[in-house]
Length: 390
Image (cartoon, rainbow, N blue to C red):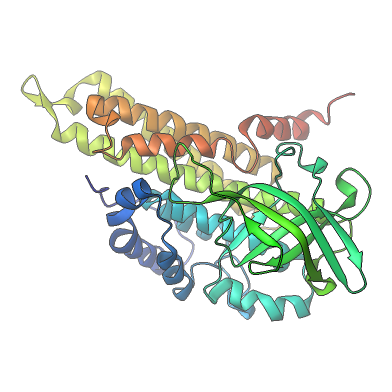
């Protein structure tokens, strides 16, 4: 059965502009995204036309400067837009989050000339980005990456393989971290690589448990030549740029997780109030009512946590610890809530006729991407107790 339209969340928004923005997003989600989500996910179809619509509507550059075509919205607002999109279809919400992540290095560390040349098309020109940090042998230990960039006159020649790349093979630009110097984090530099660069190719997309409409693939760079004008930041600054980007990206994953959890709760509530057993709706039974209450409470707590972290970021205050907490709590919440939603629907929850099973499969990946939840615990503990003794 097609996905239900997401139920409106009563949001606290800072401005009338933000309220109008959320209204626009809900309209797009209800009419352009949700009706086709189940069918297209089952077929493994990426909705590029939806991203074109989002770009035309100014929704692919929300947290960036208006000078370059961005929406100049605070993260407090941008993340709630992500939540609305992910509730309609995670492929779309996560895709917007990844595109924002891929644009971050240029927006935050690029030169004025680089920003003027590239940002407008990235933020509102219909382009789609990908972020390339992980490799087949370096995931959580990202500082051990092996992809190399060698200086050749005014160019860099990049060779290596990136793994688990969202939008791999379909992106118009890739933000690539490559080794230009010594071993470890200080020898890594960031580059902006065009999607049609000679020597760049993508493997067949991974066959995944969920999120089937979003292509995830290895990206091969075989002597890809890029001019030094596409180096982002200083030589050796790439790993610091990558970590800075991930602090913000983790908030995007947290918001997407709450969107999926909210969609699962809405489905469970609707089913429980419609399904009758023993002469009354199953929502009348206390055991089930308590499950719904716990699900709703976990979602509200997760939303409050990611918004608190976003407000710190908007105020220019440190937020890395809170971003890790939000990513950890919100994605664990999504896993619990979607599992409970399947349980509430009973046998129907285990069938593809209802979206609950898809939400459950999609929630799992959110505990893994952009730093596993075990890594988030390490980050949080490091902020509390300092680095581990060696």
